[in-house]
Amino acid sequence: MSRWTAAAARLRAIVPFVRKLSATEVDRYDVISRDLARRVWLIRVPILPGGYAGMTIGRVVFLARRTAPETPSTLLAHELVHVRQFSELGILRFAWRYNLAFAQGLWRLRSWNGAYRAIPAEVEARQQAGAWAIRAFRDAERASDRGVPPRSDDLN
Ligand SMILES: [Zn+2]
Image (cartoon, rainbow, N blue to C red; front, side):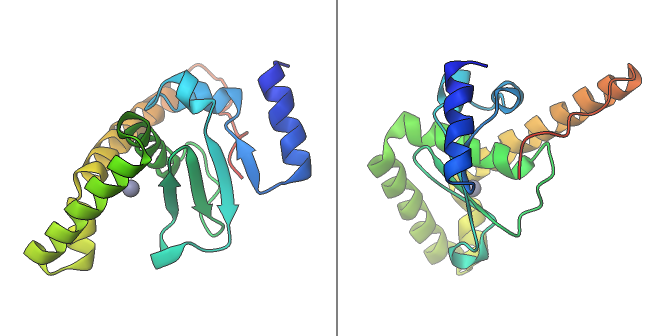
């Protein structure tokens, strides 16, 4: 057990709704670098504003409790793309661009949901998480062809 895994296990015993990605997840969610993935915090919360299933601020990913615990999780892949976007731009610049794009979309489209979906950071996160999900699905299929049981650890 690496120092990092041991620290994550200790943390989880103290605050069960806060955790880091497992080593398997760090490998699996290749939408971001391993280095960055290891520094992500996952926090389960009862509910998120606007009824969203996931929300990311910097390296902290909030997942609504009602979110299905299935793996692989396209939702988590999506939020991890946001972690990368935050790390590239910095929290303030990311938040500024995100909200500006949302406001412009709202003005242009007159639709809350349409404006949200048109935010460039959301478009990128959807595309990358979608491509990731297809890769993950193919990997799982190849594994089952070889008779390897699917991995069922991780997310809770
Ligand atoms: Zn998003």
